[in-house]
Amino acid sequence: MAPYIYQQAFARNIGWVTPDEQAILRGKRIAIAGMGGVGGVHLLTLARLGIGAFHIADFDTFDLANFNRQVGANVSTLGQPKVNVLAAMALDINPGLQLVRFPNGVNEDNLVSFFEGVDLYVDGLDFFAFGARQTTFAACARLNIPAITAAPLGMGTAVLNFLPGHMTFEEYFDWGDKPDLEKALRFLVGLAPAGLHGGYLVDPSSINLKEQRGPSTIMGCELCAGAAATEALKILLQRGEVLAAPRGYQFDAYRNKLVRTWRPGGNRHPLQRLAMLLARRRRPGEQT
Image (cartoon, rainbow, N blue to C red):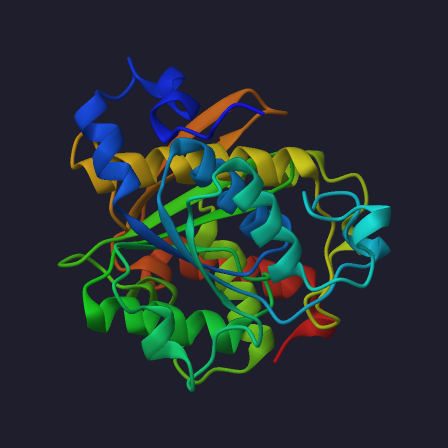
């Protein structure tokens, strides 16, 4: 077997990045919480970009319900810890990776270690992981770590960047200490003000915020990873336009549409308040 040489493994990136920029990416450390639908493909995409170090967190194991969208979910990995499976897959791409695993997920006890030396945070948490998401984004704001969230919505993605010196996650989504059901609604409405995905949902009953369930596609997850990795490249190399919240964008492959969004004040914006009111009326049984 030929020896593994980093420069050869990532030589085809050159042209879109310079050799010096590739060396910069190799020296960066990215934290990803969640190794499921989006988190796992985030890790593998960023590993193929040539990022040299990761902190990855997840407490869950793979089961059959993950097969439609999670890159680490296979018959051979059933019952195995997601963090271990994805770590092995990433190391198979780059055996020189500096990879720190957090097998208990991310929480108040390991938050300092999880973000130690990190250049960028990429959100891979489950939609309904409200506590962990609020904690991680608050830490990013406190530590001046740029953070990306790319949400898989239908067959597309909605992207928001939370950058130092700009609006924070909490300022945008306005969660506070509200009940989980209200956080779910605010997260869903805030992620994609354009709402491109809603028009082709064939079974609205598949979404139930109260029961914490909703449909998903692998296309959405993979589009998220491509978008988030591109934002990561721009942030880490400090070149290219990076939209910071309250600006964002949604791309929907099914609708063949790209919409840039801008909601000054985040969910406090009048249009967002109206969208949340309409969402509550559509789901009267799920109101808080």
